[in-house]
Amino acid sequence: MKLELPIYLDNNATTPMDPRVLEAMLPYFTEKFGNAASRNHSFGWVAEEAVDYAREQVAKLINADPKEIIFTSGATEADNLAIKGVYEMYASKGNHIITCTTEHKAVLDTCKHIEKSGGEVTYLNVKEDGLIDLAELEKAITEKTILISIMYGNNETGVIQPIREISAIAKKNGILFFTDATQAVGKIPVDVLADGIDLMAFSGHKMYGPKGVGALYVRRKNPRVKVTSQMDGGGHERGMRSGTLNVPAIVGFGKACELCMNEMESEAKRLSIMRDRLESSLMELEETYVNGTPEHRLPHTANISFKYVEGEGLMMGFNKNIALSSGSACTSASLEPSYVLKALGLGDDLAHSSLRFGLGRFTTDEQIDFTIKAIKDTVIKLREMSPLWEMFKEGVDINAIEWAHH
Amino acid sequence: MAYSEKVIDHYTNPKNVGTLDKAKTNVGTGLVGAPECGDVMRLQIEVDEQSGLISDAKFKTFGCGSAIASSSLATEWLKGKTVDQALAIDNMDIVEELNLPPVKIHCSVLAEDAIKAAINDYRVKNGLPELVAEKKAH
Image 1 (cartoon, rainbow over the protein chains, first blue to last red):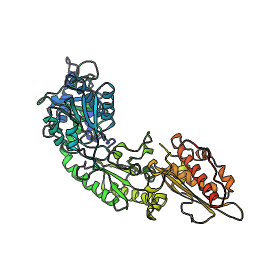
Image 2: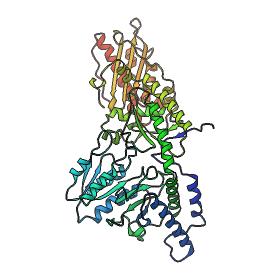
Image 3: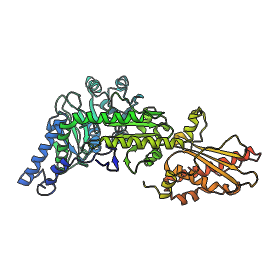
Image 4: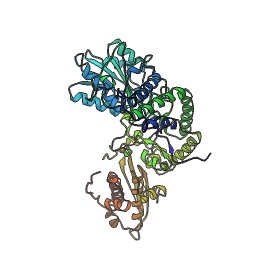
């Protein structure tokens, strides 16, 4: 089979939609266009039935009850609803939230918002391996703590936090536990009961479903959790999220969950084998480092720093053919390199030199072969061009040089 | 962000990558930037003592494509110029030639700094006073 270019290896940013998902969605744009809230005619019933079915598909994937699924526009909205909703609903119990520094901006910025409105937030540091320190978590708990918000799997490094240990600590202290599981759901088994999760955000477009749809899982039993709605309106979604349901997207989200449910096990195995091959081949290059613990990691993610070459310069060598992302500042609007990698204790130089690989359902062995060669060739070429590489090879201590910071 | 064709060309076929013997008195070396900032440029000039012209220029750069292209272009421009002519190279000339977008102007500033640093190194080695360059914002 001929290799088609460009190759997409940025599946942590978004995934292509599975054609089977699209097929399930199509009728709901046209002939089955009803409003799921129209209770008095068949158009509404058809739409409602489709939403109910999708809700079951979504719930099943995470071992929840369908009634515990609140559809949203995506994980960002679900993060906002969970954190702000709990903060407002449980204001009489306290105003303190614990989260960590490697969370997604949707969580961090929501927490900043909470701080501005008078709440208190503790941002736990992570260890070098990317995991939080459970003892630190316990120490951070106060009488006013109402919520622990720790992500399931990290979007940049793929590091999976010790969810069950965290939920046990939360439960012991009578605190709610929320997790942003956007990168984990559909990729690895996530079981809200076994994992002891009270609230969980996830999204359709990270698991081969459409963009613009996600969900917040809100536990109904032991304990019964409630969140204050963040949008006023018709009282949809058990009053927690008003707004006409996006029926085609919800149908697609449901189908995507069903496919993940059926295919996750074999897919995870296939992807981790490919990822490991990619990683070990690239690690044959000198001065190459894997970021985040390889022991607790999503099967499709790798984050690697190629010391003495700069990430954006590196990507330019192959970005016509391979789509990837980098922790380099140059690739983002801000001038700071990845805060997630810096939280792992990486120096700015290594953070600037990182690439994130996000493999997916449609990644092939041929694509991985091509990628390995393209990246190796570019790293070697750029190191020949790098003054830092030359110094390293001559045994010059780069840290001892007084650099002019600008 | 799309790169200009000239940036891509310099990145793909960089001119004058390499190292000159920094111990020689007619070689000036400028090392600017910082690894933490994601850009380090080393630019070297070799001055022909007879003619006073820059006979050779080499660079090595750690940085993005625009930084590599800026230094590659700088070495091309330096060759054949007198040291005084080289001092007149302005970062905005590089911006114009490479069509650098606003977020990449700092790459051109760095290249200008590297030229000035190399010239100063050459001057100091040859008993001339160091020139104080105007400070440009990065």
